[in-house]
Image (cartoon, rainbow, N blue to C red):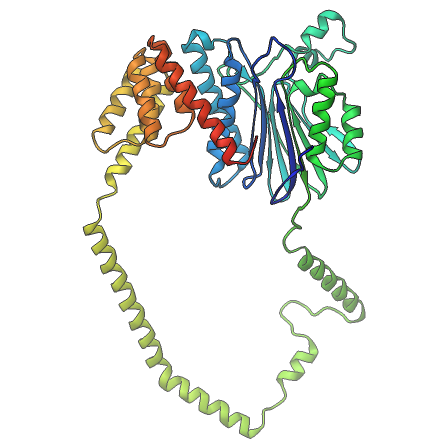
Length: 456
């Protein structure tokens, strides 16, 4: 029996992820992440031998989950680009440092929903489609040889080129994602999918399906059926997101009223000439020249006398209260600062971490290790410090020490990717059993995260 679409604060979504029927692909190297509150949906298709593709795609999703599970401020498009740059570097370092992970990489397609816009980002041949007003729009261009050469028909040789990536996460030192922001309107549907979907289902079929099927989960179920009917030669993953609500622009009604006001003023001005700068309308001048009755003039005089007599006293009382309040706040702040531990140590330790990361980025690993160890003597290090110490020691070839640092980062509540780093470090140190243990812990952690998020 088909499941129904899941509700979130902006609409509904459905998903499917399957390893397919190809016996040469026993592991599903596709991964996905759904963060309902943050409006983040993403799919990834890993590449690389010995299940390294699975590690690459899962690592990409977990890093996205980590960075977007917390509230982000500012430009989310710029923030996403920074996260992708970090992710690319982390994947590349792992692939270069461990032979079994050599060549691992992953594609990526991300949808970020904002109040009235959607941010679309992709690398590789995982795609994003937008369906609105009965029309399907392909929003991404595959980073493959065929797309790059703008070839028309496909020969046997060109068919193989179709799946050769020209851009992926973890391959080059730098990767430039295709990112754009588009406007949203109610009823818009987004489809994110890996190439396991698009090599079996045409764009025309996708459009026809979205025209006739409004439920996102039933769309995903139909995609699964088509892939299986047509051989399911690859892993396939799809997320269908229907945006039902888009908030109207603030002040739209006020703008409309101001427009009507301007229109009304324009009509009035046609009937009477506009006053010159500094002049008053004639009716206002006439109103000002009307004398007040004697009783009203007497009342006004008494209020003015009262204001002159007591106004200064009231003002001085208010100023005195303000001075007492400020003095009390100053004394309280001084008392807290005397009793609380000085925050200077934490700031200094953080400065050490920033310096170490800077030296690490330019390849000065020994200096980065020295700075981190010096900073750790100032204050008990947190998970982030142990994470970077592990990466520095890994780069220095101190694999056992690196593994211990990553394990310590996990104990202090670090990221799930620290389990992957620890597994790679133990493997490089020749401790295969411990490497397998950390990979298993990572798999259990990922499965637990998906279950807690309500995803299969």
